[in-house]
Amino acid sequence: MQIKLDKNTEYLISKLVSAGFSAHAVGGAVRDSLLGREVSDFDIASSALPEETKKVFSSQSVIETGIKHGTVTVVLDHKPYEITTYRVESQYSDSRHPDSVSFVRCLNEDLARRDFTVNALAFSPQDGLIDLFGGAEDIKNRIIRAVGDPAKRFSEDALRILRAIRFASVLGFSIEENTSNALLALSETLSSVSPERILTELKKTLCGENSQAVVNNYLPVLEQVLTVSGSPKSLSLLPPDFAMRLTCLCGKGVIESLSRLRADNETKRRCKLLVESKPIPSTLPALKQYISSLGEENSLLVASYRRALFGEDNEKQTEKLLSSGECLFLKDLAVKGFDLISLGIKGKDIGKVLNALLNSVLLGEVENEKEKLIELVKNAVL
Ligand code: ATP
Ligand code: MG
Image (cartoon, rainbow, N blue to C red; front, side, top):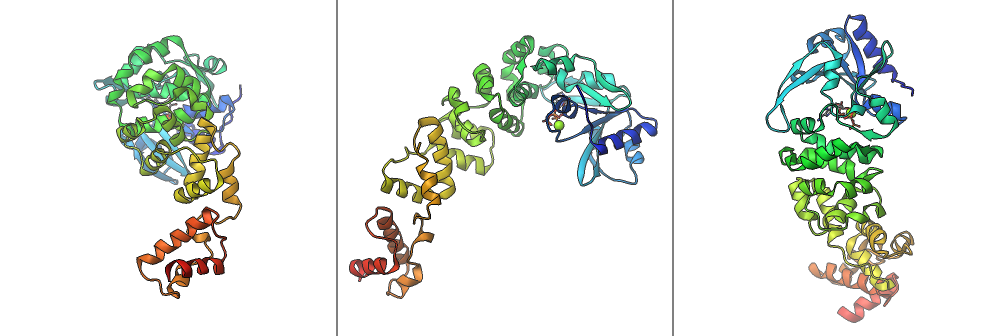
């Protein structure tokens, strides 16, 4: 197994080492690098205290992102690199927040407080791979395993329960038996985790490559944080889209779930649209009316959802119609408001007449041609 650090990480580590500190790439970067996955953020752990790190990089732009927790961020090539002092966390009285964080000078202690063996690896060009808990073997066997006693680790911080299933889903790993039993047994403690953190984890979990297996195996965990009354077994029929998958899983419970999670308005809007969607009509005029009332983007979303779950619109009629250039919306109508004004139509009637004309076009009662539409208006209104 090979690890390739990016140049900036190597530079930061070598600067810290030259200044007499110990420094390593840690966490997700080492894990993803060993897996051959793209590495998105390189975290560095170091024996240097935040003030010492700041001094080492005094000629660089340094941001004090979390001095209290030991983190400073160095920006190189417009990318943020987090350097965190080796630390341990003492006593968790609320299943989520450590009562205090203390800095230590030794990497081993820092690695021991990390959640899973695959996340407790460190690497530096000087020292190579440091693997105290069998993380490399677990990566090879595709296993998520808690560092130390799983029940203790999940009791310290309940967020780790969701992180375990998230990594299982995203990486396509299985969860080691003791770790799995402990997280199931402690799933009720998820009530101590903030809705924002739960939402972030769920987004990744439901869209991961192994999400169907995770939902099958860990539904009781998800039921602690969601109101589930949908079709958990159908998840993998859908594209990896959070709103679609959440709606499929929760069914009518999706609205309640979204407010429990304090979800963003756009996710709420999309889920509501999906859960309230009606069957897609199969006759052409009715389909045109359906698309027209929903709008382009919404129709595509609903069509993709209902096609996957219920086999509706299986000829991709919605997409075909939308790309056909046919008149489906007011903007496509050959007659505009000012055409009606010149016929003497005023105020709210303009909108009403335009909508009536659009509907006639959708139903195929009249062609979308200016003269024909104006003729129709003259006969009907004037
Ligand atoms: P990704 O960035 O892909 O989400 P990651 O493993 O880098 O995955 P981060 O949340 O960035 O996850 O955390 C970085 C590292 O910090 C983890 O790899 C792990 O070692 C440690 N860590 C993060 N959260 C926890 C936690 N709740 N308990 C224990 N260790 C944690
Ligand atoms: Mg990370």
